[in-house]
Amino acid sequence: MTIAREPNSTAVQENPLPPPWMRVAPDATVRRHAEGRLLVGGSPLRLVRLSRAGAELLGRWLDGAPIGDDPAARTLARRLLDAGVIHPVGGGRVHTTADVTLVIPVRDNPAGVQRLLARTRSLRHHLVVDDGSRPPATAAHLRHDTPQGPAAARNTGWREARTDLIAFVDSDVEPETGWLDALVPLFDDPAVAAVAPRVRATTDTPVPRTTALLSHYEATRCALDMGATQGVVRPLSRIGYVPSAALLVRRSALRAVGGFDERLRFGEDVDLVWRLADAGFLIRYHPGAVVRHRPRRTLRAWLTQRFDYGTSAAALARRHPGRLACASVKPWSAVIWALLVTGRPLPAGIAAVTTTAVAQHRLRRHGLPPAVACSIAGRGHLLGGRALADAVRRTWWPLALLTRTGRRAVLVALLPLAVEAVAGRRPPSWWLLRLAEDLAYSAGVWAGCLRARTLAPLLPDLAARPGASTAPEKRARPSTS
Image (cartoon, one colour):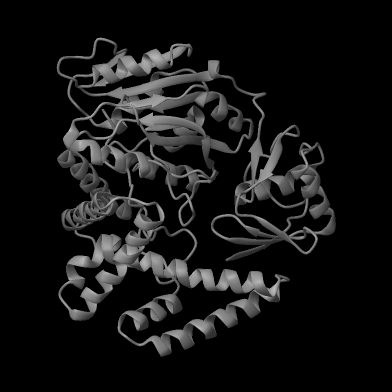
């Protein structure tokens, strides 16, 4: 947990102050204690101490008042916004949809381009970039004679655009009505470089009977869906990245970091988001805006896509050392779960109780109620166990199967899938597809590591230090380019 205090008005600002008219709302995870002077929440989890005046100011903001003109108030708002403790609400005074150019990278999907153009007819500016289609896309404004990949197609598009904002949307994506109206106002904050909508699977697409089960699975677990809760996008957080299947980006920010890395065939969106964050920009995920993605139509294509996601882990690990790990967990949590898997429940229980008590004592010294402190401390061990289970199931299982203890660990790692299936009342086919998804991704990770000659995505981060990130299972999709 990060522990921070309210900044004073003389603090040096890394980002521009938010506008006085901005209104804010708390992050869904934030809880206020000690008469509002202690905030717990955000991602990564933070404990923020406010002065009495700061707590009163935050209370007025959460009741609907704007941030106001006072520099100290705007400084406090800036720090809380950057921490993901509060989020902007409304706005729309700086930009409109007239300031957006829609960039559509495409390769061999003319029907998708026509659907997307029809759904975005109200926008003034469109740029379709044909990345070597055969035959050439008739709707294209720009063309690569030979395929150069989605990163190159997007770069060609945004460099040709002249508007302040660039909306990258793949040709197999269909935006819902009003999606840009929900995203554009967030750029009132000058620190925001990019905003991503929620990507959900298309549910009304006719599919062959043999792929009906796959279609149902995608409808409940879309690989590009980052969930229903908004937040700041950064490594080692609830939202570690966002896909570029649909992404609204400030053109000046793209220019500042050089756009997408054209050497990456997969993972180019993860790389862009992390480089924007490293440059000091803020990236937001806003599920109030929704676009629909057309999933793969066959099991083979679907598994190939998951495999491709996994191959990006090695290349990203080389570009972002220390930020890719198959699991990010505190050492004591790793020890506790290792003791459990090896059949030593008593030592594991003693270690869990002892470390939870120590962590609770430390948190209580900062003013947290005992029950809240205990809950946070215990939850850390549970999350560590889930991270290790994911690593076993999605990375380590080929080696784990070689030993009796390892096979036991694999069985334990399957339990979260069973719980997920039962809680969601999923049929057995859903559970099997969930397992197949993990296996395909795992095969891609191993293949990528062999090609790149690196073990980084296969190793855990036992320090769980800020700035690290577990390899996301929905890494970066191969866009239709």
